[in-house]
Image 1 (cartoon, one colour):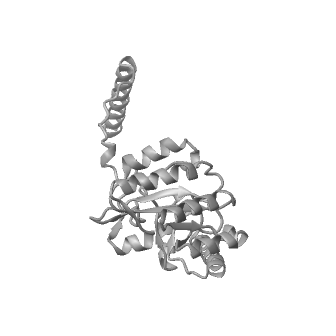
Image 2 (image 1 turned 30 degrees about the horizontal axis):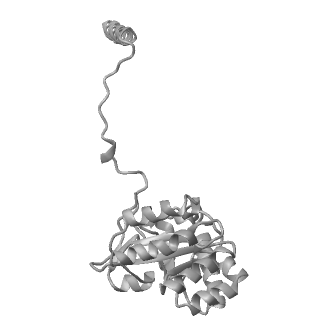
Image 3 (image 1 turned 135 degrees about the vertical axis):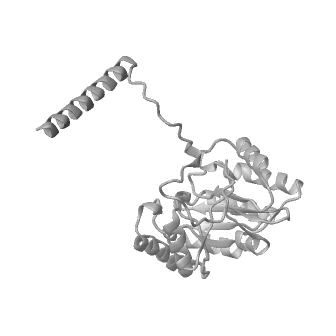
Length: 258
């Protein structure tokens, strides 16, 4: 009997203690002491182990101009005219459907000595898709680009620059190096040619890969491109397609963008 009474007494004390703590907490406005968390030291739930190329590590004053094209037919000829006039070779990341629709422009890109690279098939965020769907996207684009250009691309830029480890690994399985960029001209926002020129010149460094577009959504790039080229040349920079720039250095896989 005394054991039951003792147990009841202990339970009563525990309940009373809990009620007392609760009352104090309420009186203090529920100000519980919590540890300070250093969020910078927390490892994210999903951490990248695979990284694309953002730039090329080289001591030489060399950069790569790159142009994504997924739609339209008005901007590309203007860009090609400027590159030919300035004697600059660039890398064109072409979507498969665009290449099928504009074989004459693809032929001109090849004839002018530019590098053909892949921008995939459907213009979607590939990180939201399965391995099989990403592989099919890349394969379909490759089939189109080979048929239209006669070139087999070995560089891949995912649509919207969206990637995760699976996208990079899938591209690598298919023989592609994934290339993002170090400098975004923001030409797709059409912020004005002066803004784009200043942005490139303020961020340029040896081995930088520079993002531009020759899709019709980029309505001002042809106004900024001549001065970008001339100003970079005045600073001693020369221009190489991405593939040749990679041969001149080593891939920079740490993201330098700001």
